[in-house]
Length: 78
Image (cartoon, rainbow, N blue to C red; front, side, top):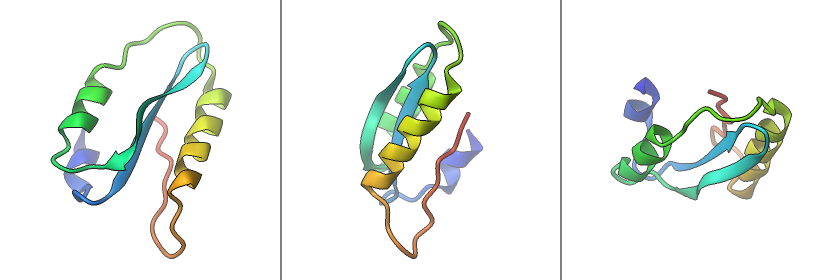
């Protein structure tokens, strides 16, 4: 993903997946060398239905755990 090249090693990222249910695939952590993030994203498989509401809500909850005023805080839906 092009996005990986734009992340800094001290950026905090978590990965939430959703199908019928939503779950945290990669808990919030610094990007570091990016290998954990790449492995997590590469492991995502389509399954079940598309419960986008649960995925988005869980994504926002994860983002709020590390929210920083004045910083760029994002939830990216893929």
